[in-house]
Image (cartoon, rainbow, N blue to C red; front, top):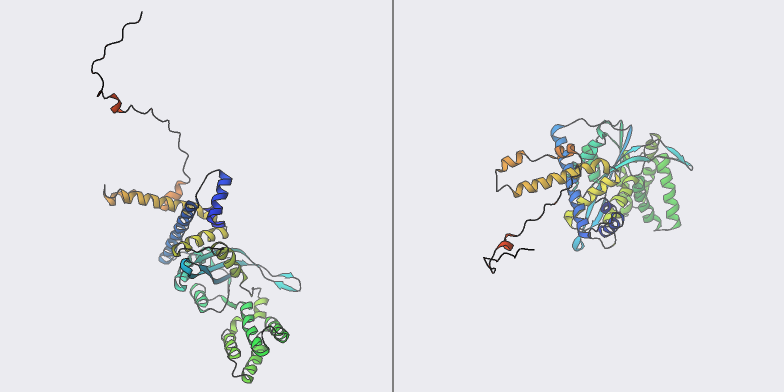
Length: 377
């Protein structure tokens, strides 16, 4: 299962055979991995329900934390595609000088991914938000692009967080204005865009927006100018990049862009891959455990959940023979199974000597009376 989270199922089966000398088919590798991922989803969903019901205190968060979210497309069967949304949470480090500029890195990253609607994803992601202590972090910044569902996510989980529009995303809108005015890929466009981005990053948006409004008046027929200007004006508080950098915040959402690539696309968007809809989330769950570096912490819980489900199926099969209420009283919970720890190795069982088949003693076809053997001298 762990190998199948890293590499395709067939390759995982080959590696397992090479390492352990045990032959496991591709279909078995896939089935067990998806069952483990589905069990982890059950555990996380139950934890969300517990948090909503009991409202427990969140653990202490770090001094400065970053929250970024985005989506990546996953190929499904029959030529369909679906968006897998990913949340990345990390701890913001002190700025370090790289070349001529100071750069801010975000470390200790953790991931939560699901193929769900924005509303469902927003709710289920509570398990990771609570786990990382976002509620109790001293400072939080949401570095995202301008999608409305992402801003709604921030409103739900950390409304007081600093909102920062991903700088490359803002740069893309300015580039569209330059291409409209000077042509796509021309030297004039490249120089104009480069100068405006430097101004936005180091001097702020005030003078830039004045210039863009003037261009809008000069070219009222150009919707690319008016549309992208309106986009930037609506997010004026999110493009104050000199202030954000002075406060030590990252101005790019690279952690979630790379998260889309390594967590989602690297495993679910390989050559020739097409996923059944029901199998996407289990695989995303396994990938989250691996890339959040929580295998040793979370795998015992997943194993306990799988054993609990096996107990449940066994009790359901025998429910017709006895009172189901009585059976349920003796059904162990996941917590009980986790406390039991790993199973102790069983003592070897000495096989009993097989009994003689009674049909072999039947005398049909034999004489009922047999002359005794003569005595030996």
